[in-house]
Length: 235
Image 1: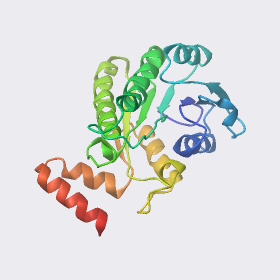
Image 2: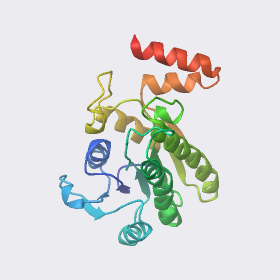
Image 3: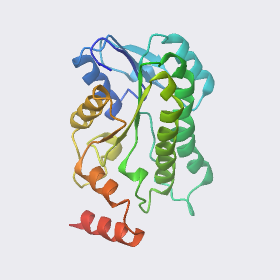
Image 4: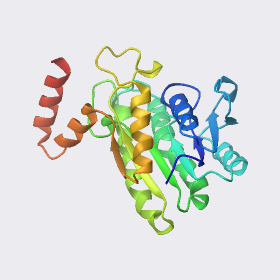
């Protein structure tokens, strides 16, 4: 799978990592880039095809798939972070996280899968797919579900040779993480790792040291994982 010449669709392309995906795809010579958002008028990158897309609305997803029948790479970047916990958080807010990260991503994959034979899907996941934090219970649960979704659709689409790649990262220097004062990766570094992973046909990309560390902790006892995570974050 080569980026150069490929027709690519990016969800949540109006800001943050989504906007950086669009810029990097153009820089690498993508043939056509469909930049999607719920408000496409906010997309400010020239040379793209802006499309309205709300990934939680099946009709909107179907319309986008009909408008972009030549897409061979889909980058599922759209997401939200509400700060809701599971016990004390509003249930509608928790459902909105799941509707976005799990059902929304699945909506897009189901709509575009028929045209992605010998193509690729990249799902933007998180180190929080594997590690819970107080204040991010809903996000953790939704991203864990999206990780499982990624692994499942990879198997289901193997017969048509569709690459399905999961991108895991810690904090990136975007407006969504503006509140975070710890170490953050530059968006262009994260996106470069993701696109290199697609071209190398990799099923998983760990974009930074934090995601690599959290993945390495998965075989440990949960007491060890959360003790080490707390120590790392306060170091």
